[in-house]
Image 1: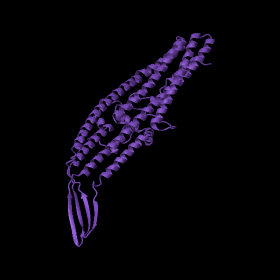
Image 2 (image 1 turned 30 degrees about the vertical axis):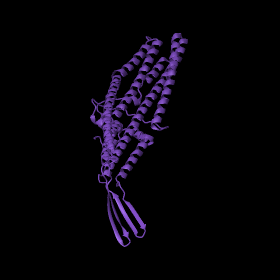
Image 3 (image 1 turned 135 degrees about the vertical axis):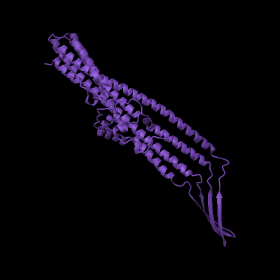
Image 4 (image 1 turned 180 degrees about the horizontal axis):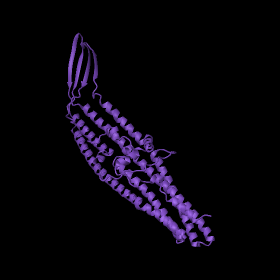
Length: 431
């Protein structure tokens, strides 16, 4: 016969923490300690690499780098090609000449163009790294939400099974005269509520998996598990994190490119002479000629282009200052959120989790001794289940806060164990 003690055993099983959600009682004290945990998770690293390979955004950024590199290679070629002239005239005097002219890049415009192209390559590489980190952060956040939704759904399913057994047992005990009709009604209402919660959790799980498939571009795969450890929040912000952010590197390189364009605009206002050499025959006479062509910048001295380029430099520098402020504020906010979330999670591990287990033990003893009514037992048991659901949600919030912090600090690839693109792509962190 179905007993309340079996119901209680099921309830105790429901209270078990999910394996993926368990954090160490003593979280790592330094980022490097938790980084090792991520390094030892090749499955997650392979998953993120596969997401990058499947991502149109990442592939498009790679194509942009290749295009910029091709333009940089082209900028290494000389700026001006020589011109060949042929001239033949048949009159009383037959004249035939051949000439060669060449414009001299006297002010090294080609060098300025090369510097602009090189900076554009660095900008594209920084944009590629920005896309990679954004995709990785979005994927990891979606993965954390998926696991939170899956555990919530499993908890709701076990809760519905528990409430079903409880309602059936209440009906049998009512027939035996052990409980009142009101207790049976309450049990049935609780079962209906559990079914609604299960339906809602299943919908949330489906949405979470759809979102994960959308961001990763992968379907019908075994999603990798998240590490058991996370980086302990640092005490303060390391300035090097901000200096290494791809979004700030993009703006610094854009400012460098703007300076290179300013230099090019100034050189555009300088004269590039054209030298020509001509030779031929006029009847029996030999002709040799030398010409020099110098453009006169009287209608357009290109000074407006130089002024515009100077303003572009100022605009890029101010854009960097604004972005630095925003990145610093975002990093501070992400770090504060992560500290608060981990503080709450530590409190749960230290006191809340044990208190929850003690509550279950006490409920079992009181019920076995007959000192607790079915209604009180049901209400307090549901409260215990709700507490576990809240703990699962809190663990998900800790993960999302951690990912947001890693993203704001530009540390996602390092945490995953990848060589940072700042080194692999030679982006550099200094201006």
